[in-house]
Image (cartoon, rainbow, N blue to C red; front, side, top):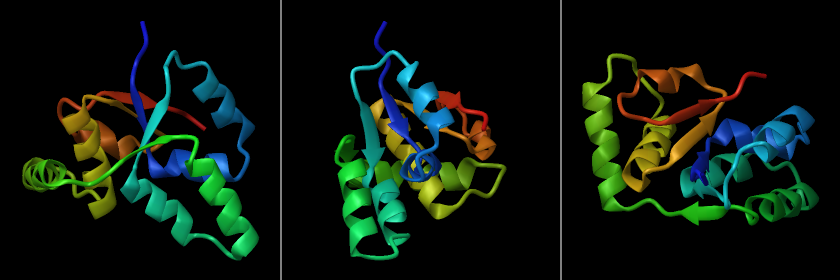
Length: 126
């Protein structure tokens, strides 16, 4: 069965650094394609150091299907912030909300996401 996944920012960062372990784990997931939140894309591109790296990072994120932030996702992020027992980063709330609204499984190395009810997770160990 094909599963639909959204990649967390930390996964994109590992991929940008050429992490072979993460690449192999992702290649083992049965999926048609991967989605990314524009929040994650911004997080990765902010870390660019020069024009060459900027272009390399842009090429990398183009291989994924982008999901834009919209009001339904923002509202879900606010609801998560109010319900969550654990304080999550603003960007993590938006990424989790995107996964929930779109019905996607979040691929991450961040265990903090386990505190979000009903969030489908694929937790990758490094």
